[in-house]
Length: 326
Image (cartoon, rainbow, N blue to C red; front, side, top):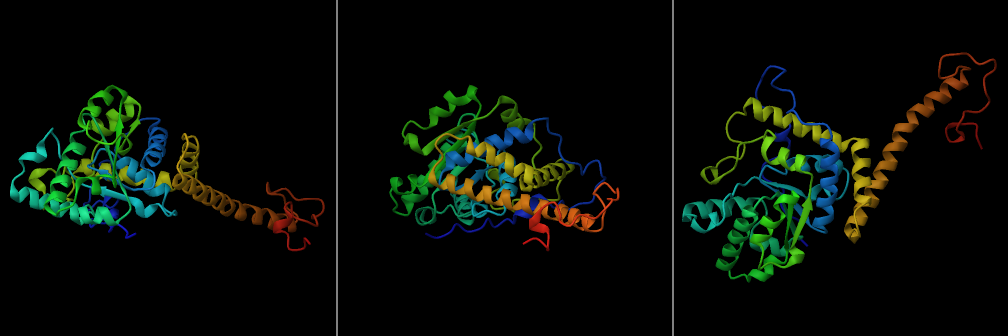
């Protein structure tokens, strides 16, 4: 099975502001207490809902989940499964009235991100992830891919079964999200219900690291012009979330949330075992320097607190780090 091509916009752009500004404007965007915990739980549910798929985060609303997972899965086999798709397709039926020029620009944009219908058929299945209120973005994207497939002579069922839609929703919007999928297989649409505070923050209040990639900008560079102060602060928050995910504490908390998911699939179970190995390895790496320092102090007749022993011990506290141990 062929791998999906890397996103043509290099990922580090989210972490490297390209302008000089005062320290206050370069601070990370303000969040709220408990954001990390709610994002971790949401991320674990997204992975469980995606199954054995590549995760494609559509638009800008769910990119914080992507940033956190990008750090937490950095040393795992899942790191290459995370992708960003800058795209804005708001409004029910917006894809039906596209001009030929806009249709060509949109298809080229999707192709560059590995979403050509023939690529979808030959690569690992896709899980499209986005915050959903009415489901219009997924509805329009499915319509665009369906029309494109038909123009290539590909049956809709052939590519449709390779695409899953992961809707991050608040419980108030679940009935509206259900309106756009009456003809779809239930197994291809998954809902991840999150607290209203998190949904409102990601959808409305969070500063975004790049301008919206809407119809008027299709075919232009994704990053746009020089970033504003708001976008610089948002990129700092992206970096903070990445660092938290890559930390030992963040990875362990994600692992705990994943272990609590109901009936994880085989591929999720493999990822859980992989994360466990990395957590154990990081714990050993963090413990070795302290134990070696303890041994060195003990051999010189000193305790770790700086007090001198009456007689130097013949053996360090842990025989593993004692050269004279059998």
